[in-house]
Each structure stands twice: as structure tokens, then as C-alpha cells.
Length: 75
Image 1 (cartoon, helix red, strand yellow):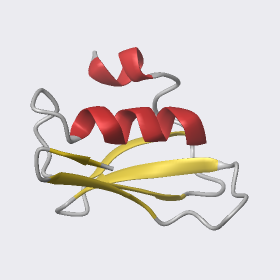
Image 2 (cartoon, helix red, strand yellow):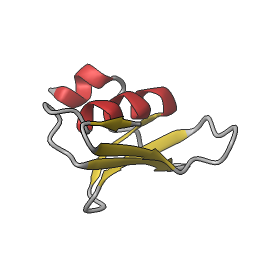
Image 3 (cartoon, helix red, strand yellow):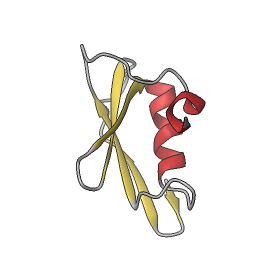
Image 4 (cartoon, helix red, strand yellow):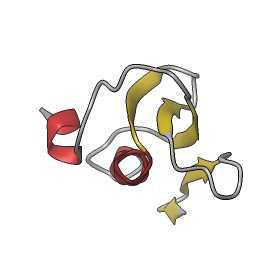
């Protein structure tokens, strides 16, 4: 997904439904969230209000969830 030249990526294996990390272009973890929430966070992160130039959703099996929805992450 791209927004104004900023890019969101997914490196999830096909069929992966577990917990995910969202990391920015500097490999800083922005959130650990359920898969669908992680995609919402990555999309917002690359928007003009989100402030990131890129975001990647990657598997994080066994990781503790830090955010349960987009609003939780935004606050």
C-alpha cells in the first residue's frame, strides 16, 4: 500500500493469522497487535498524520500484544 510516496509492506507468510509487529523504516517497533489491527496501524503510520515514511507488518508469534485497536495506538 502506498500513500503519497510512503509505503506499507507485509512480510507475513500466506495464511498467517497470529500476532504481528509493525515496524517503521528505522526498524523501531511501533506496535505489536492482532493481524488486522497491525494493518490498520501500518496504513495510518504512513499517512500524513502518521509521520512514518514506511511501515512493515511482520510476524511476531508469542509476542505480547501492546495495542488492541487503532485508537489505542493513536492515544
